[in-house]
Image 1 (cartoon, rainbow, N blue to C red):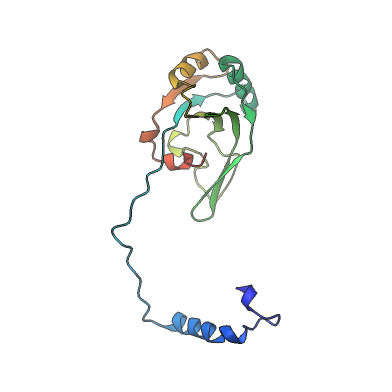
Image 2 (cartoon, one colour):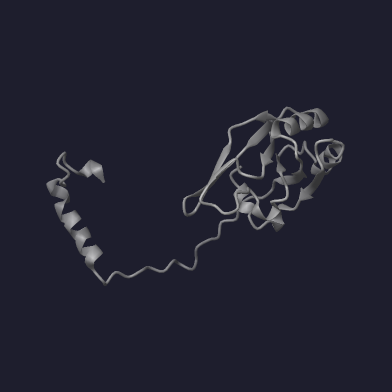
Length: 178
């Protein structure tokens, strides 16, 4: 680290032995890899949210306006969500948000608006035919996804809408931090 080096980029005397020992480690062929303990606990994420999939050719601001009119809510443009994956891959997902004290409803664009180093630039690649998702995190039990589905079937800018079973998605982990 730079904070242990002098201005001329040499280590302070205290650290010289430490740096020399690192040189030895890098040139050694006796380095052993440690096995991961088998008693590690698996972390289960909470997938208690609900989702609707939408096929629509409408622009997202127009779709958000239509949803606001039909569901009597106020989705507003929120900061885009940057999802980073391994190997320097990332996607930028456009989002609209309606928030109450105990609930959040998000309109998410499935196709990334910006991406790097990724072959399938979708939030949910296995559902690439869907243009948008409505992500419902509802601790207050205010929003029923089936009621929302019935209301949104009357929207002219929605060609198709379906309740998505999150537990069956391969890439459901993409939705954890949304």
